[in-house]
Image (cartoon, rainbow, N blue to C red):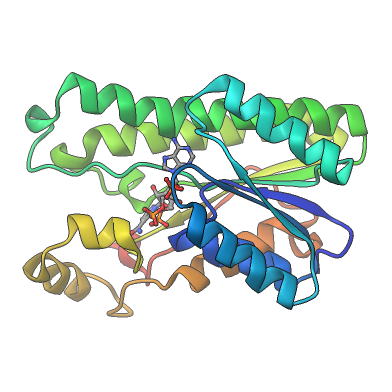
Length: 250
Ligand SMILES: NC(=O)c1ccc[n+]([C@@H]2O[C@H](COP(=O)([O-])OP(=O)(O)OC[C@H]3O[C@@H](n4cnc5c(N)ncnc54)[C@H](OP(=O)(O)O)[C@@H]3O)[C@@H](O)[C@H]2O)c1
């Protein structure tokens, strides 16, 4: 489904990003695996994709640093010549009992990664896509927290709401040049992030709130991202898919 396409996936060494990168590789994309600290697992993802017969490179970049983002985009162009797909997956989780438990330092770090990083990557890749004049697809990973905010995840929900608005505004103005922007909003998903924030007791309680009675697997999030990244969604832009077992219909 992605033959001939070049895709950057941020935070692709672990969790949801890893599943997206591997599914893209399976669908014949040339994949740029961005990582910040997970070098070993990023290299394993590269090997997996190469075994499937697709091309992959790893690039280290802290997306909260603008120069790193410029380097990530430039290296992709040097290696592959163009960019067709960007997946803004990298993110930081933050969940406390109350917003009053969040320090200003934590708040700023969260915004620098989730909002600034997504903004830097989106604008840099958008500029490249506009110059290429061949359209493109940008997909951002948000969260069901936007629909179900609580005091303790308020700052996190705020950062993801910003990401969603950025996607919708870019979709509005760049559709004329066949650049599509969409959002995938996972509910609780089996990755290190959920293991960090969910005690056994909270996991049981939340599972009972989910109509399908299970947390998402990273591969299930990746399927929705593939829909938006590929021509399967050729006339879809500015939209959001929840992959959360139906939790947000409550
Ligand atoms: N798991 C869930 O329940 C859930 C639910 C809703 C939304 N999400 C969202 O899904 C996305 C992926 O999270 P995950 O669940 O897969 O957790 P994860 O395994 O902890 O992945 C987070 C990824 O973000 C990368 N990252 C963090 N800060 C970065 C930075 N400054 N520069 C570049 N990369 C950075 C990490 O890279 P390194 O490891 O290389 O540092 C890591 O690969 C996040 O946006 C998260 O908010 C997750």
